[in-house]
Length: 420
Ligand code: UD1
Ligand code: CA
Image 1: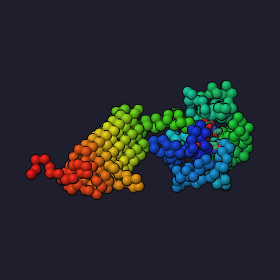
Image 2 (image 1 turned 90 degrees about the vertical axis):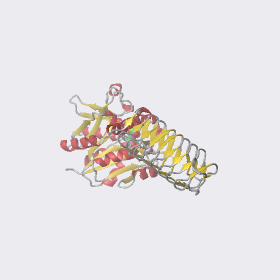
Image 3 (image 1 turned 60 degrees about the vertical axis):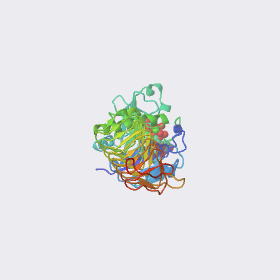
Image 4 (image 1 turned 135 degrees about the horizontal axis):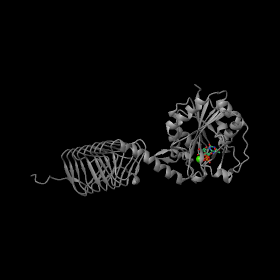
């Protein structure tokens, strides 16, 4: 079997994004575009992954992280030019090259495997991935001969009216045999409407040279949508939310209204938990079984809701543990807090976790009852079964012991009702 390496094109500015940062740094479900593309690339286990960087290079390098090699494209002269820069690291390499666009994030591992497999089975010089779009505008069109063989790819800007009517598009994902690609790149010229060296012309020249050229068409065209504008970004986010939320629902989570719910990648949620509308759940959050979240909740990174916990209307939770069966149902901010099980967090409870310089922790014991409108100035601990009266301000370091009852501003111990 031929060796496989991967080149990811991520040097472009993404002019149509009108952004200061690189297009591939924009987030989808809480992760940069490039991270999604890298995941897909790794699924076919390439020997090397070479990322072509240029615009906003340092940020892109950081996102790509370990396990990648980088090559700089100083001037963004086109996709063909970008690949040529990467070829400098591949001298003498005779294996296959999977070429991916950094802005096509939904591509499924199974489709990449099919692309690579088809290429190997056919012993092709080049195999490209195509899709049929009802609205192909903005994409390169795949022009086939009457025999059905691919003849060339024509960019929208350079296409004739007849070519523009073609609905089969180039996904921007290809496998090339390295020597044939190198030869084709050497022959590229920027004589086109955009004045760029098009990688797509390398496909055309391989076809013209009579080398074996294959095309694999995806049956799920949505996976090859490219992100060129912020509208594309929003559209693709919606698709990704469908995937993420679909998987959770199939695993037994109720999501009452997926269209107003946002769940980042890598969130885990247990069975029979119900997510009510207008809820935002951030990256890496873990939610147990039988929980209730929302409506209008914001559960941020670093949070764990244990089984049966409830987080309700206008409650924000960040970097906190909410113990089993604990309820925080209305109008609260809970940050950097560890709450035990069976506690009740009254409406409007605020953990004042930030003193302007540093973040501090709050600890609330099992079965504690935090009265409505309590402010807990961190660092502070409220013991197991302890009670704070409505409107209490518990100052930092004034820990409430297990079973203690405090009230007032600042909160001071009081005797529990009914006790002498
Ligand atoms: C490209 C294809 C088009 C295809 C579409 C699929 C070409 C000429 N066109 O068009 O046929 O339908 O993708 O999404 O290849 N990049 C660089 N350096 C450059 C230029 C681009 O690294 O000099 C990178 C970009 O950062 C991006 C990728 O290459 O990640 C694709 O570039 P983009 O300008 O978005 O190409 P499209 O116009 O979408
Ligand atoms: Ca693109």
